[in-house]
Image 1 (cartoon, rainbow, N blue to C red):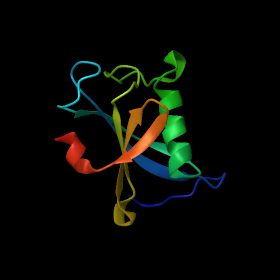
Image 2: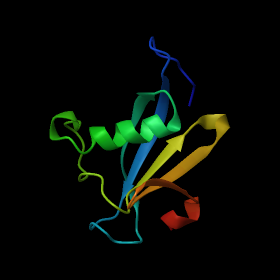
Image 3: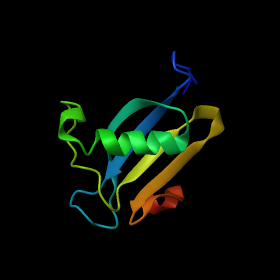
Length: 102
């Protein structure tokens, strides 16, 4: 990912959403959608992603997944700065290790 600043000082974050075939399963996460989210920080990116995929009017027309819910995983790929995985748990987004995806 190339860190591109937008006019408002936001960074374009490369985001991939992972979901299981059935809601609330613990294993078998598969990538369901990838997009760029303009945000001021990783935390802001997570908030924007949640908002975009849980408000019907904001969901992209070609999105085939479901609303984001507990257990879903977000990958924020910052290129040379690393890949950061977060899982939605009660209480918010929590960092996880990639091995959780297996």
